Length: 361
Ligand SMILES: [Ca+2]
Image (tube, rainbow, N blue to C red; front, top):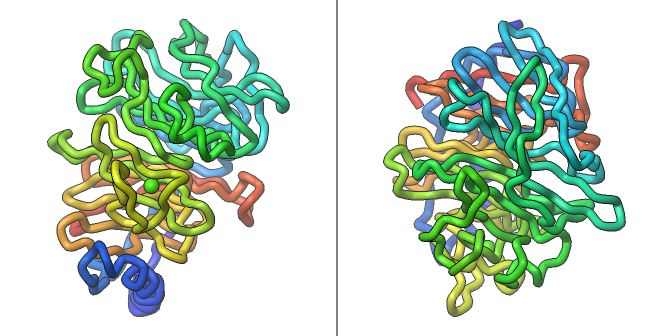
């Protein structure tokens, strides 16, 4: 099914309204922005339908691998979904926002069939998260070995995004597990971005000695992206009802939660590049493309664009409900909706994998 969205005059009025709050809230830090979209028309192609609470997208050649929170990985080929199980040595716990979350293919997946997953386990009384190396074999994903376990979890704020950075190391986001102060505790892996070797060991050049922690003071980081040169790292995280953040991540730095939010400042803590002010984006997966960040937005129900040169914000896509993750492949952006996660209003075709060409963006 092809669906064409016209983002014209109506969209511009929505954008202007949305941005007014942004300007007010960011008047101390960011220059005033005039917002417009380059896009008068977007052609959105539906690639797959009826995904079940999808969480993370990966792509290898023409095949998509999409985690579903209940524990399967949806393999999408030519629009058809094949659900393949993930066989784990510690049973998946589907509780609140937890379950099968992040997923990324090994850089040498072509030859070794390896990938990394992040999942919740334990019990509802003691929720934990772990990072596991899995191997694709006989149409299922089988645990090879755990790389990191006992990451504290909770019904909410489990983090869970995992990505391979430009340095070919594994980056993992963890939430504060509903214990805000733990994000400031460098002996605790919660509320952080972690960085590890692909065998699970701690890189010798990590900023804190003998620690996986790459940055901390995060509330519930959900997205990571790097610019094309791999020099600047960006992160998205959920603020405490509004004040959602897009940060530039520097090794060893403290991003302030829960001491500061929004533009508040405190010695030794970094403030965000963008924040949502009194609006709520609930930002999730994020990609970089030609000087812009494209951020999946759950409660905001859109893909929100941020021009890194002009600091302007714009809307790439709306009308599809909650968006959980985005993926860039050449000049095409792929996104998964998240209307079946219990917080949306799913249509008969949700959740969907959609493709949006960025030519001209
Ligand atoms: Ca912060």
